[in-house]
Image (tube, rainbow over all chains, first blue to last red; front, side):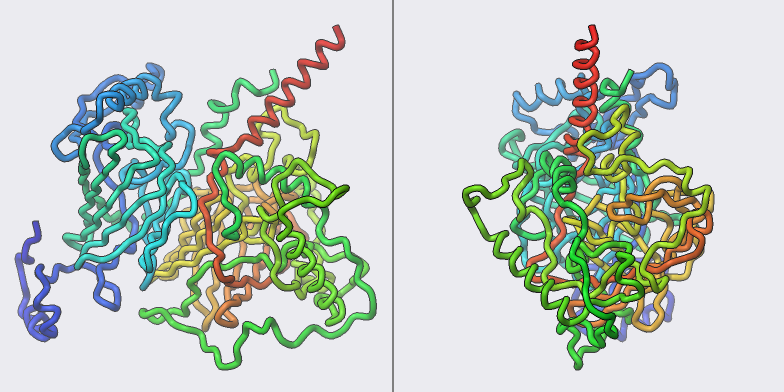
Length: 267
Length: 353
């Protein structure tokens, strides 16, 4: 899905002609993407997914929200899913668990309580995230709940302990950043519809920049405990281009305290 | 956080409260002798031949995971009997070094000796420890008496929420507790001032940005260094709106746009809450391969009678790394404090009947 730029000015052609042979042998034409001094794509920037995957990563129709008081604001919009092939290959017990989760989503969805979202959910929530890419490691700061992670680009490190955001080890495959995520604690969901993972879920993410302002994102998810086979999600992150765009602060704990501790308040 | 501490979300928050209870007052050792001039050198890590490394795009490279551990226990405000003396004498430092060694020996003990005091808290090795004595007598370095300037009358009216350390806290609501105990934020200074654990500061730099990831409470400060203006003053946050620039090899970070009446300038963001007029100017200067000099000027014309400065060293230590501090997700301390208070009220009401 990589196109040659439609217009190559004489200057650009001249420039390309001057590139050493090693760069010329790259599989893909040099797209106009930001690059680090060593030639790796530079993902530094503010990114955000569009779409409705945080409601349901599968194809879904619009429907009423759980609180009529919110009217149209609280309703769930329809959307194309991000699961390749449409369905998540749950084992039968897991499929039943998902339905149960959906029924009790107001109680069980970690997002409702402002818990950290885990991977991959953090990437396509309706909030931006900031990538800062160094010559070594790559840091992700997510606006929602100030969740974050640092992708270790050095020697593979196993997580010392399972965590909400998991342990991310990355490497480059050409211009693609591949991030291997293990050590997830199994408490995270993929969306507000009860699709879930376990502490044996393994996520392999692939980030590629087809041009300067988009990231093609794919993740392969495997977990023999609840899925019959590995499955894949894919979506797009858009660079936030507004002149004053920046990561804001969404410390949502205080928006969830009445919900979590309300019955323990002095009457 | 040290690798020996294997945290899990369910115990971390409870541990924070318990450790704060058992941590006790900061170093009660009284200093003796006459004031001597300040030690001329920093730690041995400052190699003479060391030059500041640069990133491939030309900025000074401050990357790594840094900790303020060495000044754990150093009080924010200097004890009055030390006057204007910022540094300990060599003799006092040697004594403090011995205390650290003794503590290291104690930490290695796997079992408790007969008659030794045993608490109900977690083991000592959960905490972080200084590896070498802090040379300073206080974290406040200016004014010369090492004490935070007086509060303005309006600031004294701001209530200070419950921190950890009170066995019988006011617990009518979660709102009685500090923003740290609620796992919301410790604020900018509270997230770097040395405490009993969670002091890690991981710096990741990219072209035009510095990100500082702070272990507790999983903060990520995104600091643009491209000269862009501050966000609108109508956007207010716990961690403020940081803007950075380089002055030689020093990263200077100016932070404004704070919410007023949240965290204070104390440990863990405790103390009298600052106002929305707060402006912090931080300076990060790497002075050796494993040492960074940190200082912050606190300017809040609605809280303090004048600005003041806090400074202390940050170091890189072998094996030291940040862990995920899932505070809110495991905040049993909040649940237990509230449910305990309600149970107590119920029992007292039953007694009266």
